[in-house]
Length: 101
Image (tube, rainbow, N blue to C red; front, side, top):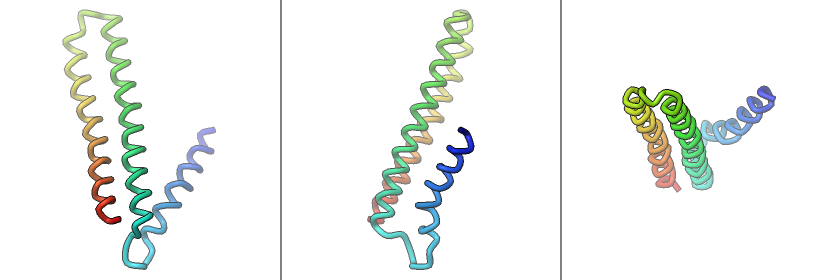
């Protein structure tokens, strides 16, 4: 199953990445719009999954050992902030690509 997802991912990325390297001088408007939608969609999905896993693991750790709350809470907040910064980066990339439409 892992190989199928890897192949699907490669083909999906190639469908949009390879035309971007064509010698026509740049990316056209429809490709930029699709790329912007994919950038924010995949970025938000990945960020949501990452934040969900991080929060679940931290809450499980606190539930198992309530005395470790102070040692778990601060790194969890730092990790969530870093994950959110990647989502915001994908948003900025989407805005830049939308400017090319």
